[in-house]
Image (cartoon, helix red, strand yellow):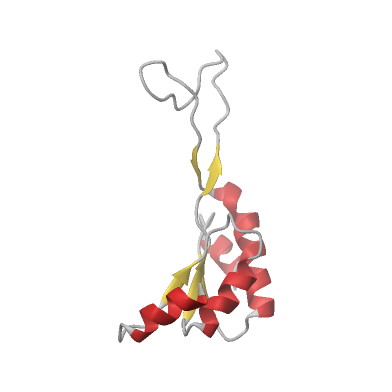
Length: 116
């Protein structure tokens, strides 16, 4: 992460903001590497892999293909907020020099205030 971020920083005049996936257990380590590479900020988080509950008939809610098979996809919405808050909190405590752009599960102004 540090090496890639450094290369980008050295090849642009724009501020670099690194997006960190929620699928990696220790976002603060990635944020620290981004900081060492010259990033100005990080964005946390993104959709997470998930599988929707089936319909009462047993069929998948979001079937795929002619056989209407189950398939995982990206989970988003309010369910992500507790995970996004945790990731933002972890990074904010340990990598204080970076700005954090929070995303994930923010549906209202009250939700966005929780990230401040």
